Amino acid sequence: DPDGLENQIQGGFIWGLSEVLKSEITINKGMVQQSHFRDFEVMRMGELPPFEIKIINSTEAPGGAGETSVPSVKPALCNAIAAACGVRLKKLPLKNSGYTFKV
Image 1 (spheres, rainbow, N blue to C red):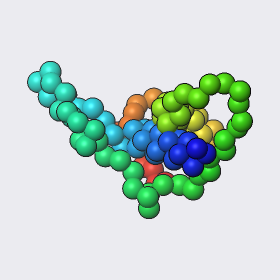
Image 2: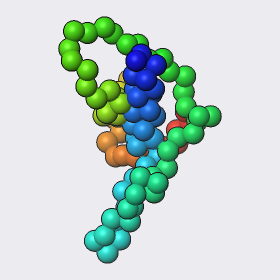
Image 3: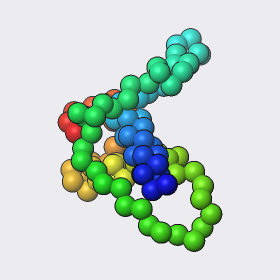
Image 4: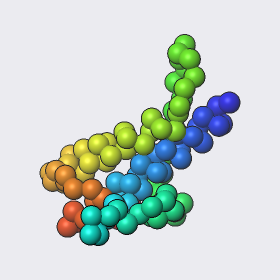
């Protein structure tokens, strides 16, 4: 199902982008404060940059699709910022980096 596959990849991309730009894990007295996924801020449709998903045919057996797009977003975005601004940000989420970002 190509539409289902694309939706899974889009969801993973949005989750990964939300993690790198907005979400954080906070600790108070040795305890993680977030206990559910609903405790993490997720990007809204109006905040998202335009993006396009390209599906490449493969002979490999089908597997997880949405999960693969989550970890690739973080280094891609940080590398793009470094290339554009000459600044290598190493603290996530980027909202805690000391810089202001507008998507």
